[in-house]
Image (cartoon, rainbow, N blue to C red; front, side):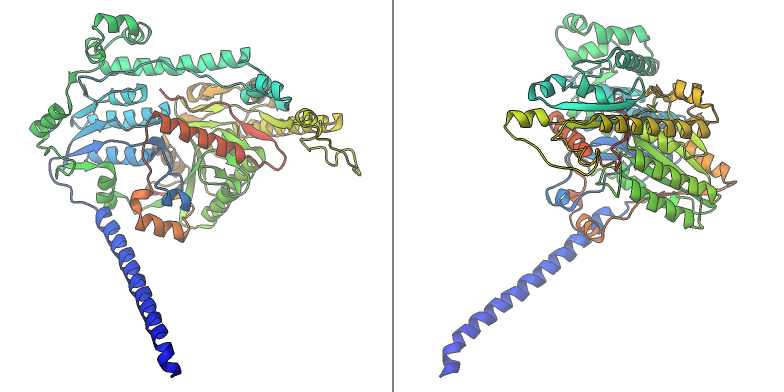
Length: 603
């Protein structure tokens, strides 16, 4: 009787259990299929004779891809995509000597924010490629300034008939918060060492200081002069013609009847106007490329690198390259920052690895925590003490804390337009006692000593606290100067003369003894090999491995790991998010920062 009553429930349970097993097996099968599909899609293609290498970057140019968080992968990417500079340079360099590659085509429509130093590095690689005698053609529907600067490295520049070339010059505008803070009753206490240390000014002024204005104008003029000269030389026009296009845009456009494409062609900025159909037909007739993205003779940078991995030299000593990209923070740091503890751990592993003969630290950072910067410098010094040469290679920005790190190297290399220097220190402390008073919120209590509870933003800073904080900043600045003087073999007075928070280009820094040589990452790696006494060498990239769960997510869902380039609004929102996250990551234990207000100059 009892078994008869429970039989229906047992049948239901068996059904549920069976469905559970079926669904679990189906899910496992789906995961296996996705992994197999990812492997199939990522396998190295065969490069056919007569192939054309397409350089079509999607997103912003970076030194190293930002490791994604699990939430970023599951939400469908990280917003603005990223293009690793070294991947682009390596592909162009290999293609120059690859007999299967007959030409290089540059398509810039999806190129995002790009610092001028990174664009200049690609242009140099393209110039070297052109010595092989292979043609280089650039095409876009329209060009912004960064995209056009890259495109001018080509033999021929093609644009859509309804496109435009937007050359605007360079500018830097900051937001100043003092009036808003005054209105709210928030007082920001500033402690700084360095006449030109302008990072704190948005909190203490409503406009740009004369010192910051003068230095910024010099930087912008220097960079624009180089950009203008590069464009003029590439297009075989005069620098004055480039200036006319920028300054008299309205008049030239009126003369062209409002046709921006014809105006650009008349001024010699582009060679040919082709719509999408005409462009596809041109590629088919000249390079036998089928009018489709899957043309067998078309190869993109990623697949080309995968197909030529066997070109990597395996003999000789090892030179390790470690990339320090982003704001410098204490601890491990979130993705996109230079975590002091994480970098030190990696440097210690390189010191103890007998295979590594030399190290290059590639710096792309405006600085940050003074404490973390010093810990990284000490780890670099430990490498040198172990007999392994260290070379600092500066990318777009290696300023303030970024330069502090570089003082731990045997040699410092920079690009001509790298922003560096900014040798200064500051501290910020918000005082919200007045807004709390307005709200009727009172703070009271007791302390055992004058400085106990002194760093409470609900209470004004005491005179003792103000004096202590300023003395701490002055001491950190003195330590910074000492590191610079010892590293650069100059007196403290000479170091102070080029410090004071002043920002220099790489060329200016070299002239003032802050940089040893001008050159890119390849030259820095060669210098490290030379210092290690290596006649043959190969390079490896030193990086922290992703956690297993992220590796699985990237393999299972590879399309989610890159991110879309997005439009102007998407790029702007992504930058705001990045700036906010950087500010929240500031965690120096002494609240002392060697951080530069400078941002990578982008054309």
